[in-house]
Image (cartoon, rainbow, N blue to C red; front, side, top):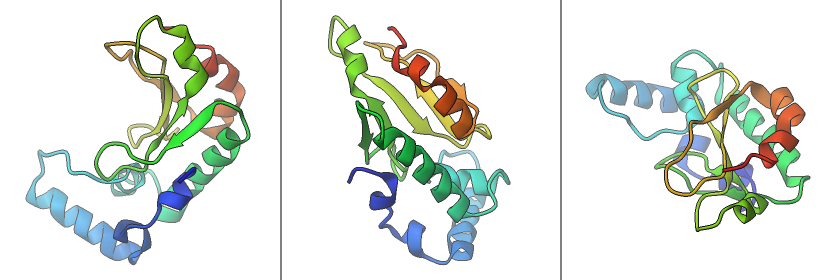
Length: 149
């Protein structure tokens, strides 16, 4: 799998959207203080930030189109439990003197730009940089690729 669209095989991606949302909301109600595993777009829909699953898929597909056209970006199809996956900028690892984590771009429900970048690092992860959507990502991609540890 090299893009998020290739990873969309689970029930949560194919079942009627109303069923998916109803089950998620029921699970939240039964366990309001837990962090239930769910894709970023489902969390965003539940919070009212996205109007549909298709809108979330569109964000993922547009990011994939941008990053697959640039050398060095690799899609990692597994992330936290039930999440979409994330992107790594592999050349950034060359900046590390020890094994670590390359610059990473992940989808998020925590803000309306839906994307976070975590700079390359060894040991403790630095704070994520909120990206204000695809236009901001495109505009700052070279800067994100050149982040230093």
